Length: 77
Image 1 (cartoon, rainbow, N blue to C red):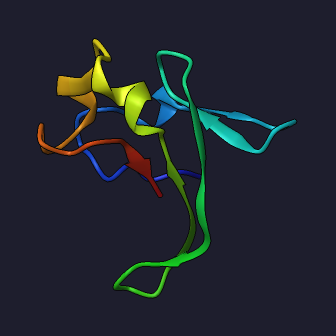
Image 2 (cartoon, rainbow, N blue to C red; image 1 turned 120 degrees about the horizontal axis):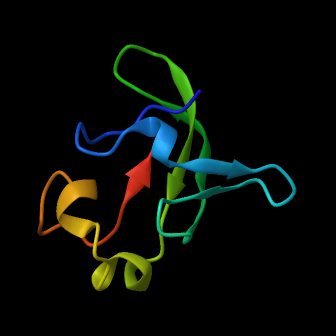
C-alpha cells in the first residue's frame, strides 16, 4: 500500500511496475526508490519514492500533484 504525502492526487493514480520495482506516476514517469527504510514520526516503515526533477518541471498535473508549488519534485511514501 502506498500513502501519498499530498491530499490532491489519489494513491490509486500511481501504479507499481513489478518488474523494475519503480512507481509510475499518472503521466507515465518513473519514480525511483529514494529510501527503502523510511520511518515516519509514528514509526511506520515505508519505501520512499522520488521523481526526477525534470519529470515534474513541466508536468501538466504539477498543480494537482504537489502540495507546495515551489517543490521541485514529487515524493511518495
